[in-house]
Amino acid sequence: MEKVRICADVKHPPYEFINDNGEIDGFNIDISKAIAKEMNIEIEVNLLDWTEAIKAMDNGHYDGIEGMSFSGDRQEKYIFGAEYITVFHSAFALENRQDIKDLINLYKYRVAVQKNDVGFEIITRASSNKNPISIFVVSSHEDALKLLLEGRVDLVVGNKLTILHYAEKQGFKNKLKLIGSPIHLTKYGIAFKKGNEAIANKFRMGMKKIKDNGKYEEIYDNWFNHKMGYFGKQIIENIDTGVIYIDKLGRITAVNKFAEGILALSLENILFKSFYETDIAKIFNTTVIHHILDGIEDTYYAKLEIDNACEKKYLEVNYTKLLDDKNVLVGVLINFIDITERKKIEETLIRKDKMESLGFLLLNIAHELRNPLTSVKNFIELIPEHIEDEEFRESLIYYVPKQVDYINKLFTSLLEYSKPNEANVSNVNIKELLENDIMKSLYKSSSRFKKIKFHIDIEERFTLNVDKNQIKQVLINLILNAIDGIKDIGNINVYAKEDNDKKMILIENDGKQISGANISKVFDPFFTTKKNGTGLGLFISYNLIKENNGIIEVENIDNIVRVSLIFQI
Image 1 (tube, rainbow, N blue to C red):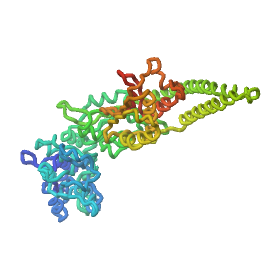
Image 2: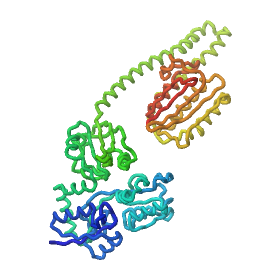
Image 3: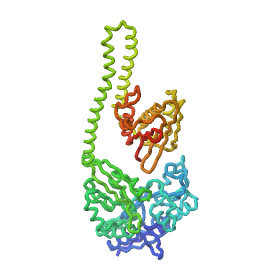
Image 4: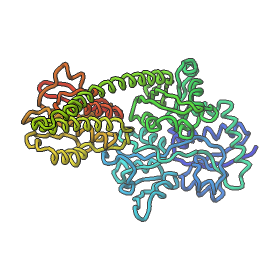
């Protein structure tokens, strides 16, 4: 029987480690043993310090090294046999470090990494002469965590599951937080020295066999407890909604026929692979999936638009955490329904509503134009007979320009409404927009500000994902309306609120309230209570806010008039 000597990392749970009974244990160990048994190979596995294991392998003391990431540099040096699993490398900080929110300025932090780990390679490459990173190199993930707990480093970068394993075992998992998304996704398995192509091929063949006969899944279930079970799979196969199950390691372990058909997926290309490697990552929100796997979120709802065989499909999607009978997170369940037909019906109704609105708009335009045009026409008809009358001439000079100005104002508003108004969305700081732009221009243009007290209460960090020019236009219009609502002296308050699912801007004034009969009409085109108003300001504002996925509401509360702009997060 052929004998193969393999080395691996002594401190890399749950893949390779010494268990509490002093025995060599781990997922990779069990996979290697299963392959060896299937291929009739005798293996000897020894666990060493990771750097020593690499040296021993390079010096010819071992045939293969287990737990090696398939990185570019290593593929030039070794022949890779079987791929055992896909792993994530992530960055962790202490939970109380509120100043660390992302990895954009990594050079500002002290980072602990295991020598010769992929994390070490990533951080070393990220360091530069201009922005050098303070790197603390240790011999294991466990030692890196000790430095973090002692406050000697700010971040630990390494295998996500190994870091969490040590943190949980030592009772401080709740003191850690993940920073950002995984910084690296890598295939992970067994490597051999160049020249050992024959044994590498045997391990690849052995891996295929244990996957085909179910042994791989048995070992995977034993270590990572992802199993949905026979009855669970029967349930998802017999429902008319799409279901995709991703286990806690990010591996797709179940996809029902409905999902396969709607998304035009091939099970062969996605099943038992990391979702990052598949089309799932292109379709669904990978950030949400990670947030649920990392315990940051429990559920998430979204709508998606996808192109499927030259046909658009619209989906409603729910992302939900999945727990086992011990209330432990085991994965993410993505459940979706096809709302394409409903969307088509809604669009038909919207088109019908738009046509009705257009008819209403044209009727009102005709009405609004008829009055000033009739006045102008009457004056013109009277010119031949009354041109010598001084009083008539004065009336003509006074009234006709006013009517023409009104028509011009009306058409200006209509042109503004008819412009293509697809929102050019960006992240807009509302406090900055109000104080540095809107209020300054309004102060210059209106002398009435001297009699009105403004109170702006918006946090510096308050932002909206909207079209900057459109939100500016709306805010100017609403503030001018608030000014018009105050007869002489009064107060205008502009403030913002934010909760779990929405952001709001509220504009309040203590001027004249809107009557109950009028409040339901304020967004109708051409409705106005102003002497010289066109009645299009709030109508245009309503449509601009709608274009930016928000809603606008007007209400009387006690002795104030409040306008609310509401945006779902």
